[in-house]
Amino acid sequence: MHLQGLKKRSSWVPDTAMVLAAGHGTRMAPLTDTCPKPLIEVAGRSTLDRILDKLTVAGVPRVIVNAHHLADQIESHLATRAEPEVTVIREDEVLETGGGVRNALPHFNGQPVFVINGDSLWLDGLRDSLHRFAEIWNGDEMDVLLLLYPFARVLSWHGLGDYMMDPDGRLTRKPESHVAPYAYMGVSILHPRIFADTPDGPFSLNRIYDRAEEAGRLFGAVHDGLWYHISTPADLEEANRRFSQGHVPDTPYV
Image (tube, rainbow, N blue to C red; front, side, top):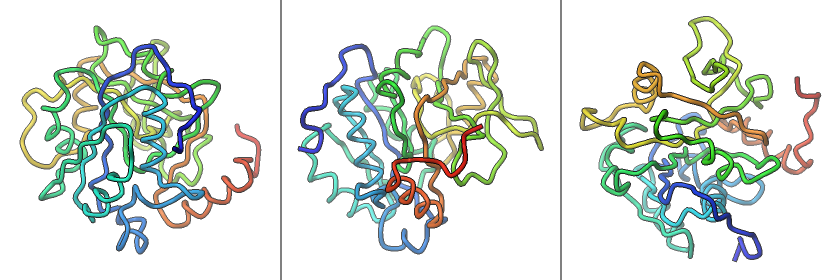
């Protein structure tokens, strides 16, 4: 087994995670014309498997995966895994990120869950990242906790970052036309209560993040390892090159 010999953690982590794998991944075309983006391999292993490996090591026993684009491939691939226990939810229409999570709420038992983009690719720092991330969660103060990466270190990023963070970890979106110090990595912990009164059908998780921000209950934690933002075939090529060279950057991080 791929994870044989890896030690699982014992402290609290959510007992359920959701991996978002339903999108078309249009910016990764033509690769995604015939392969779901989460099944595209980086250094010989798909991003979906890498995420499920990390969830298993962190001790998360149950994972929900939504699927729409090339859903048969997602289901067939997941059927080959022994752990974690995976439930696939097939969406007849693309519900986007927020609608997809809302559709899965009955599986969460009203408890906080990891929600992870199916194309998020990260390497741990000094400790298991998901375990370290979960330790920061405080349900009395938070509805959403986002894992962030220093914008200056992002590989192949062409935006302006996502969030500002105050000394207590509370997040606000960057002002328009400004550069933010942090980029969102596509890894979060969400409490289902933040979905109260949300509509049926498609909507973005950004709506949920903005709702939590308005209530002062959107927080962030900074990842201490590496993260690869893979949006295009060129990004994929660069990530494979960095993996083959041991993740050594061309220039020092700033």
